[in-house]
Length: 157
Picture 1 (cartoon, rainbow, N blue to C red):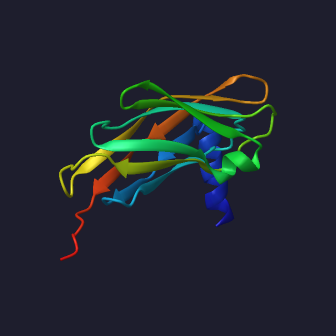
Picture 2 (tube, rainbow, N blue to C red):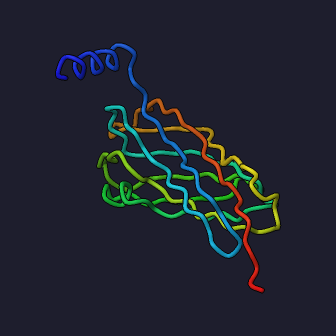
């Protein structure tokens, strides 16, 4: 067990395991928003700020963004603004040099805005990832997009 852990750590050091910001997936129904967690896996890097854009279908969804527990525990807040229809920029920042621990840094609340195709998988794409450390240096980030699946709702008879 210890040898395997040591080998994995050595491999990460050799290839500089990058930090990742990932958007989760969820099911949404009419009248019931879905919650998608945006998680940080630091890969050993100490991030003090994160910026990313996410894209979605604005004809089908409304999306709001809230601060996640890993961000608030580090004294950070989440700010977001529309870049264009269906694209928002998110900043996870604070006036401190506290590192952000692995975990949920932001929460996306996704609500249906229209009558979309049922059982269709809609991608919530993540792009333009940038991280920073306590010295203001750039930290490499990669990311994985999430998805929302629209579930049928049954009207009362």
